[in-house]
Amino acid sequence: MPIETWLIFTMGIMLVGSIVALEIRDVLSAIIAIGIVGLAVSIAFLFLQAPDLAIVQFLFEIFALIILVRAFIGKKAHEDSLASNKTAAVVVGVVLLAILFLCLPIFRALPPFGEPLFITSAHYTKMATQETGAANLVASIILDYRAYDTLGEVTVLFAAILGALTVLRTSRRTQKGKESK
Amino acid sequence: MILYVLCFALFLVGVYGLLTKRDLIKIILSTAIMGYAANLFLVLFGYRHDATFPILTEANAGQPMVDPLPQALVLTSIVIELGITALLVALAIRLYQKYATFDITKMRSLKG
Image (cartoon, rainbow over all chains, first blue to last red; front, side, top):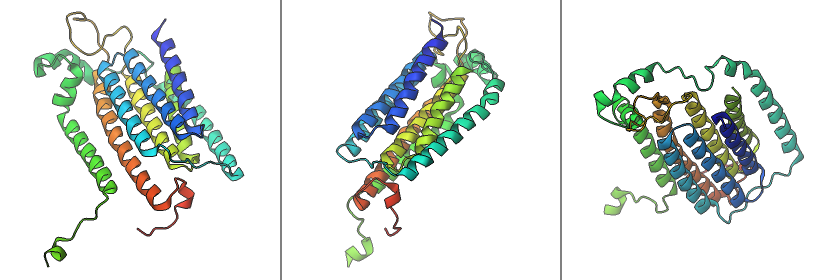
């Protein structure tokens, strides 16, 4: 089977899984549905010849599931039952469908699937082994050619984790000036 | 092209959840869906027909490779997404402790 068929199949699973995750009442079922979506993304990365990404996506999914289940287990989700909310949902759905159809010419203008632009990457695939000595081109890009990007990413990650820890901190910080007196 | 459209549809499902849901858990899940769609779109964009993964081995020496650049950038984006999800979950837990609900329409006071 051509790769497009497999990818359309996995994307169908993703679409169904995400709609189920958004519409189902039970919190645990919604979190498991989002896990299905993430693992389908991981499989799609494998089909797209990106083994590093598949592994990272798999780990991300497991971590995200652990965090979400640990945080939200046993808590009752809010149930949307108001009529006004339903009309809002219909309006938003129609508008988003219109956006999808209006954007179709954009996807036609993009380079077709399977034929990337490959301008910057032509240099990387040719020269990366000689210039960086790495056999894995993805590693050579994130750790050598675009190392500052990675540094910025680590900074953002550090800030996010620091923010999460600060928000979750239970003990109030004692003021040193008052404590000493 | 159908793959791009499906990927964009997945993104729009996330936008739909973000706009219509009033439950904080569902909003966090919507942001995760949008992240998946964006990452997948970038990697779809770098795929090349009849090309191998971008790791040099003896088995695929001399063969064309898929574009390694989107893969490298998406790798960092996935990791950032985990941090963002953790931050959102922490904020949601704090709000639940204060208001005893996840309904965003019931969180009205600004007092800390």
